[in-house]
Figure (cartoon, rainbow over the protein chains, first blue to last red):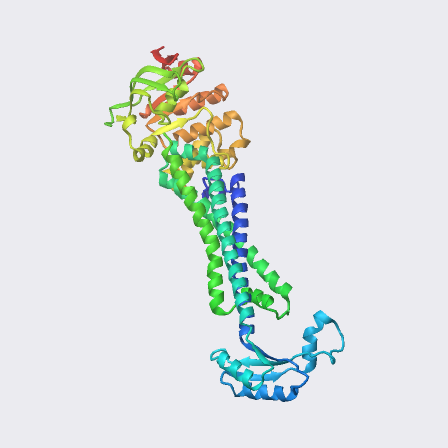
Length: 303
Length: 224
């Protein structure tokens, strides 16, 4: 009966060698960073989309106070116009204290009865067929001269610009991480191959064919790439889950976006999932490809 | 090569490393199937370089080197593995792989040829038994003494029953009794038709084998 230790051949290239361990750690860290960059990209896009959606669902009508005008009458008139306008789902006048509350951060808790604080009407619009803002503005200006319509367009545009800039930044960071990962993996893979040079020489001198040596080498790098890649991915997912739990029950857009990384809608989840799974696969392929090129160069230069 | 042809044929072979001086000069040597030769010479005379040239780790810088009838200067890269499989080499520094067991080291040439452990395990264990290492089959080379490593290296060189054995100081680190035992193994293979070229300083070994010696002096080969 053969000793079981002799039945299963060990890998020809040592799996625990120091350069290989360095490669594994390097790849795992770079994969983790790539996952974080992808996550950040998704977070920014989700949060920006949530913010702009909230803003585009509502517009505000403001009525300035004039001593000669009857504010309540103007409010009622404006509400009538707004409710009758196509594309308006609801219009609700905010009471005086709501306007005072908005000024509180600047003025503090002071009685505002003496001040001409404008009154606000919150208008909820149908996003799919919004009202004709120009016509609505014209009608309001004609019948309620103190009213002005704020469609938040400027804020929306600025938010979109900022979100776009942040997305570009995340893509740029992701690109840099990918480039650095590729360079590091190439460097580390070469170091591993260099440390295995004497083994390659012995194998070649024994008459091992290049494809046998390549197969042994592929096994080593495939295992390393997959272990490191998935370790980075799992660490990334744990970080996202941590963000989700830190966000707790908060309902703000950022927490919502964080949650979406863990429990995303199907379409987003599929895209994010595919991008994240691509990270270890790409890392493994890079390691494999580099090691093959280095090995074939090494074998070519052997006598 | 026909079975009766020359195994080694060196015609005015010279060897130099890079742009350095010639290590070997006008070496002529012919060994036929079943020949046994001992290569002697002082340290630095070129014995190891000549062996390296013969196990295809180097190419001659001048002259023709034919192995099994094939000129090594004209060999395609794809032809090297099959030619090397006909050689059994005992390296001076053993070149055992430290992360593999002694069993796996000895079996490595068979594994490289695509054989499965089930096919070679018993033969390898028998061979390890012959060289006195069966009890250390699962140990790593770094736990072995110099003599034990040498025996493992010899076992690895002969495990494929090669057509040509090239050995650099194969008994240099073993005691006389084990040296005799290893020599018997090599002589047995030689009796079966394996050509053997052994580089050695050991005069006693040459006398025991009743072998012919070739003497290398300053890169030139002379019959001793």
